[in-house]
Length: 237
Length: 239
Image (cartoon, each protein chain N blue to C red):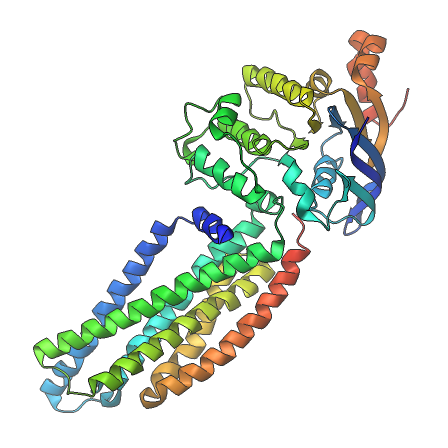
């Protein structure tokens, strides 16, 4: 299977605090990799390092064959929603996405993408009039419109209603069927379990455990959540 | 060219156009007031303490140019704060730095936009204010006659230099504001620069061009040096 992201013994510290250390994992083509960790585990930092938004103190990250950080070219094949997405609120969705495509030096069907995320009826409204959930959908539209090979989603289900959550899951599955790889982070076990193919537990700054969701679900059944909580606490079974 | 278009899309230009119109109207009102003040003072007592500044066109030009410089320098700092500080220090930076475009190129585009908006608006505003003052004086026979061709060139050059000076103050202020990651610090910095230098322009009306030329050279050099520091900071910026 083709490797899309290789994180190799990466370390990152802020002043005296070591946030990430000896962290290694890989993401393969067409899979959803769930990064699970408690608040402050370093999930967002790791994602930002993949995007080149944070410098790497030690180790290497390769994205689509290029080293992260120094060469921004690979970013045209990466889409991301990090934290709460922000926008130029005087623009409408069509204008925003068209601006984004120009930055990415790509072309795409804006109306189709807006339809995909359920914003086709409000695309001419200024973004300032959007609700939190609508902004989350627009952030996702911005992340996928240029048909990236890697999609990085930092807690993407925040602020979405249950129907939108289901639709987003279906959308992610469709995207991976088309060959896109997704890195998804969350601290909610149920959310990751229902979405990801593989899960990496980020604890103490590194991936303490990695497993196939289907395999562990069949092994632990109703106790899957207890198993994962134990792993997140630092234990291993 | 594409980057310029994209960066301009992010700015709500109409807000700045209203601000420019407001500055222009205030400067014009002050300019006409300067014409009238002199006539009133001279009519009442026959003497006037600040005669050098108000009794001839060089003095009036120095005064309006100094005021324009003060207003447009602060205006420049406000746009620079919005376009640069807000973009890189707020959450927008995450998406801005995720684009596959060299960070230097984006910053350069932003700085050129700030300088162009400031320089063009400051220059045109100052020219219009002086032209309108000139016609007002002609209609009401307020000021003495002068060599129109020479004066037109004088106004043109001083307006261009004032535009360059104001935009340089914007860049200087934004780098100072960057250190504090603060819009307010940017504007306060521009106020400090303006307060300490505006008097130089109005102090010697007969040498205004030379003074502004010297100031422009110094300010542009400082702005250029600080711009390079800012570039390095943005290259290693973490968000």
